[in-house]
Each structure stands twice: as structure tokens, then as C-alpha cells.
Image 1 (cartoon, rainbow, N blue to C red):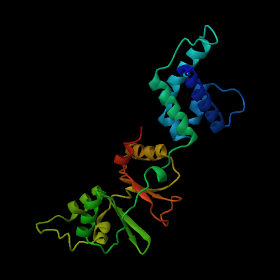
Image 2: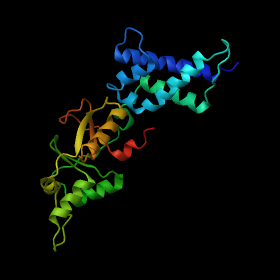
Image 3: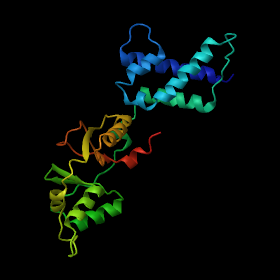
Image 4: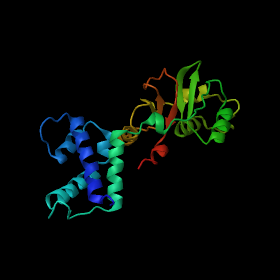
Length: 234
């Protein structure tokens, strides 16, 4: 006999409720909705799925409290609802982290590299974030907006030579503040997503997140995340 959707829903719901209790350190009964209130202050995943979880709290109450018999649930969730709550359960059990989700080989550039070389390399890889390191020491990140800033400041009647201009020249002209942050490979992708949205609220331009093992700028660069990458998050 196939498992009913209501049974699958309740199994996932109860697992999520237990995860919220553990997350908040609750030792006495706290309502599911209060658990959400407490947990969302600490956890980006809960904030991301908050609206869904509140709807599922209402649905759980309808299933549990309005049964007319042990074997009969007044509300049978749709397949999409069951699949979504099971996805949230899996996400809380094994949160997707930036280092695994977005790890890819990153081309490292030198301050002495020409703009032409950087653009040719970036064009081939279709990756236009240009991290600059000098003998292993991070010097800066040239993003498309940073490059536009450089061009705007240096434009003149003369043609700008892409072969003569170095990445060091460009870094010296970027004056609008740091448009990147270093993050740990273990940071959840939902927390990474929030960093971009919070920057917008604060009126700050954040072009990229640079991933290293523990979030230190002196560590090996593992990958780079842009807002475009995070559009893949469901």
C-alpha cells in the first residue's frame, strides 16, 4: 500500500520541528510558529523558507487536529507540497554550502598582467571577475563594474591601450570601496544570498563573494560567487 501524502508530510514536518527545537535550544514546549520566530534570527535557511514553513504549520494543524478517524486525514497535501517540505527537511539536515555548490577552478592574475590578457582569458572562460594576486598575496578584485569605473576615470581623446594598461593600473583607480567579501567554504548558500541582498539595502555595491577554506584572504582562493550564480538557488 502506497504511503499517503499526509503521512509523508507529517514525517517531514516532525523532523523539521525537531530541527527547530535543536536549533533554538528549546527544552520545553514552544509552538511551531514561535520556533520559526526564534530560529530565523540565527539561521538563513529558516529565513529563506519562512513563508513556506508558516503555511505548512497551518496545514499540519488541519491534518492533525481535524481528523475524523485515525486513518483519515481531512487534508491530503498535493504532491508539490510534500516534495517541497521534504526538500526543506533535506536542506536543514545537510545544508548546501558555498564551497561545494560553487567550487570551480579560478584563474589567478598578476598585477603586471595586461588588461588585454585578462580580457582575453576572461572571455574564453566566460568569467569576468578578475582576482589579482602578487606572489600569493591578494591585491584586489576587478569586476565588470570596477573596470567600467576605471574606463570612466581615464577616458580621454586618446585611445586607451589595453596592451599597455596593467591590472595594477586599474586597481589604483578603483576608489568606490571594496566590492567583494571573503567567505568560508562552509557558509550556507542561503547566508551567501543574504549578503548580496543586505548590501543592496545598505546602498553598497557587492559584486562578488570570494570563497576560501575559512574565509581568510590569505588562504587559497577556491571560487567566486556573483549574484547571477545565486539566481540558481530555489
